Image (tube, rainbow, N blue to C red):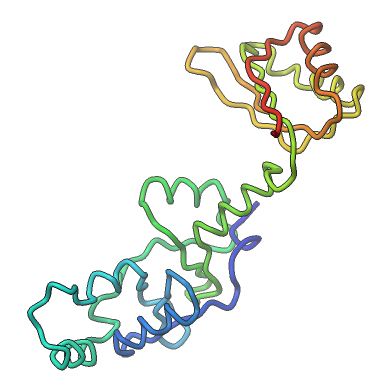
Length: 215
């Protein structure tokens, strides 16, 4: 899965010479948190909801309303924008974007191709995609199998048990445990009878540590 699969292809943009109060109005009207700044189609910066809040006067300010409006009218987007935002290309793998979100604490990525802005991908877009990939939009049962160790290659046997019980796999993740050479499988199933599935897994030697059924 790549960024082009989740990005908004025609994002709302703004120009660097735009007054800050117009940027604030644009953010509010479109209900967005990331506003790419472009000039002749090229990305030159980014303003975000957080940046705009930082330049907004607080209630504790000693300035008069007239002075506040004057300052905001004079201030341009280029005065406050992030001139070096984290950017991605349409072909950037989704997992790379996730690492950037974690390491750089960004909320959105301008998507650039051939030096032109072609879209924007936000943290919300990525979360929605992951929720869909994990089958979270469908009601299911989560089963956690621990202690796989070197049996990770035997996931085919686990799948065959699900098939035998007509249990539909909504999602499956394998995670390394803290112990060396050990793995955990977290599986979400859609099945009418999880008890039989549990019994067959245990009979095959798999250790089930958790079963979460919807209330």
